[in-house]
Length: 235
Image (cartoon, rainbow, N blue to C red; front, side):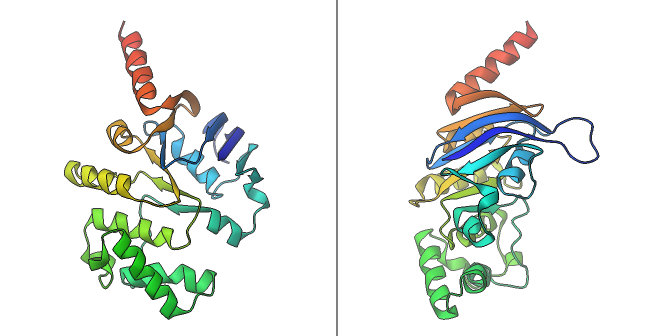
């Protein structure tokens, strides 16, 4: 479980908090969602969970342990991150991208890393991407390749930041189906403004607005809450 306790963050050049006193728990389920429109604070929250930002108040625990007490290796084996720009190295093939972390961070021999990477690609039904460079694959394929790379370290949790932002409607639907069919021990937490995508993939979530939690529950409950809020505002 990822437990966020009274977490706030204020950017150095800002007079207001980007997120304020966030209290939420993410149980270990297949897919969960952090929802909200642009500027709601959801990416700031992701960056705090990922240790890219240090909260100005509060703490974050993963399976009972404060994330700041973990060393770099332990943290990378606990939490993976696929950022919005994917960060695939353009000079490496998909295979090269996938074997980099295991060989450099864990000391896995290259032949073993390549064998593990091919097994992962086959498991995720994207083995045909192994020898291609990022410039040679589509946006949807790149998203899958980035997730496959992250799964090489077998993290307990993986954050996906706006995974459908560069995908068209059909590719988004295909990606949602692919994500649902993954049979991994890793729990995914998607950060998205897309309620439709969240409804296709996630069981539960949290909805942020102006840096504060507005709703927590099943995706259906959150959608109902938002519909009621819009209706009340229009009344």
